[in-house]
Length: 260
Image (cartoon, rainbow, N blue to C red; front, side):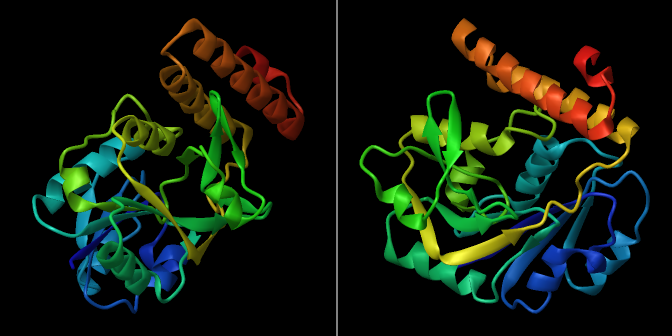
């Protein structure tokens, strides 16, 4: 079974990323490095050195556009596509676990457990317009549970990806949740891989006020897009924006975000 990894990188050198340190010794996988960097990190040369396919986005074009470019490069065929951020630590047996899951069950989407500093980040349980974290892996087995999750580490049957294109009006946020929402509506079977645990570090968290303002501008548009279906959804999206504004005001000790 052909396993293709799509890794999107942003303003980092490939060999300095946590994800690369996890995948560099993997054999029999195809890696597509999609570079959203705004400054040259020498990644094209490094990608060629390690046998990776390199795609330059000519600047930060957003995650949805990067995914679509990578999917176009993969083309038709059998196998599984795995999506990776550049700040995820993966277990050494991840490829074997994905191949085994693909061979033994009818699922088309496989969600590993992803942990961050707080606990289990992904998968999460859909609750109305939002979602909540699981406390333990067994929470996903409750009757009637609807699942969502993050992109990094998610594996998808290649045929599913051949028929899907990400909405390029999204820049960074809610892309994964929009994808899984689309898949739930199509009744595409998903499976949680409870024996596969990834670590997400969020090394790209913004620090400066200016960077945070730019990041928030994209977040605001992504929230509006994701919660555009109905007036009730729009009101829920406004609550999310208000919470984010307040958190950023406290973090950066300014009221600027209330008017951004």
